[in-house]
Image (cartoon, rainbow, N blue to C red; front, top):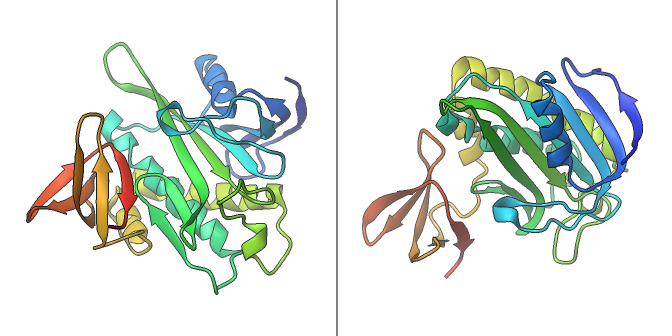
Length: 250
């Protein structure tokens, strides 16, 4: 697993290490975090041999897309750290807006996906490391964006753009936007991020299904609360969910 090159931190505090191939950028960043590297370290792979998404699902990782993980050390509670999925989603959405043809419709699906015309273009993965006292030590945030080689049935950034998309230029656009959004979240809290996310929410007020390990709930999507939990109206009652597989439509 040899780096292709090392990019110094040219975006504020970012230091991006690029690999031709590695099992998982999440594991690369976690290894560096355990060695004590500072917040802002990031690992990018041109392809991954064992990429993963939420719940340990495999993440198809052909050459031609963005596979990026980065280290965050926020001073917050473990529950508050979950809000970072929305901070990342909003920053990714803003970066995609620099390229997307306006004929296409982009939406943010709870809790960690970005869709274009109903097809997934990006996913986000947060993995946390806790201290023995239960406090948060660090977060490894993973981002996958289909750029030039979307898997079948997925959207790709190049195909919805009127201009040429360079993966590393898009990466830098995203990291610059996330840096601003992250600092704002640390200083101001979640309210602004929540508002921006809700403006782009996928399936708002539409029928939805929340699948938990032992039960499935059907209702209507009513947004997210002040902590980022999903709100669903089920049998006339507003229910709150912090986890679950979400599907929209009848």
